[in-house]
Length: 240
Image (cartoon, rainbow, N blue to C red; front, top):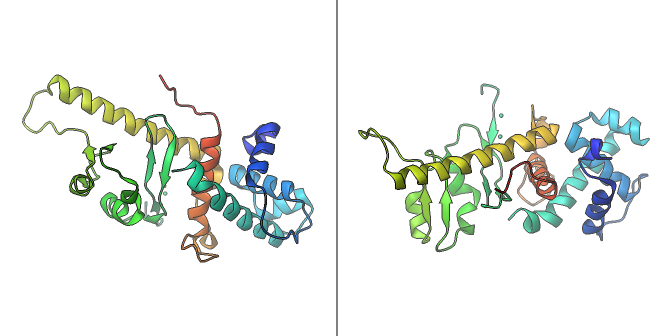
């Protein structure tokens, strides 16, 4: 179970119980537990639907339909509770944010890889979650100090050397903290890509369609669902 889903049997059952009740009639041959199992296996290993259909005794069309359905179920049920990236080949990227406790708290919809970091921040809805007194650590490309100040928050980015030979102690410490935060985010992204092969790409074009009125593509939901499952799994980042 852990190899196929990254969850123990007990954790898998706990996840299933959290998702109950499923507010739709089951018209599929597979029971709900097996549908969830199929979805997790697809997320973790990205097996083709022909392969999954053979494993579960169903058709590729049914496997694809179950996967889309359960990605939406997990996303809609857990994203707001648990969760408060690919050159020419066209790429997509998104904004990820995490707390000091190494918990992913925000995952934006995905944007064209040509969009600037500032554009993504402004369009993603992230600023709606910023509160007065918040301290946000970010890389140099996030030119949003004014937007943070308007909300009573402070943006901290790595300092530039300019004409200085070295930083003073205060600047050095602030830069170290910011660099450490960047490392944590990079580890989160790396962990997502290693745990869930569906995150490695290339992205099938059908994943970039919206299948409901949420305004999110299927791949937007896949990324968020992988983030949810990642938060539910043991972290590789030490809390020391």
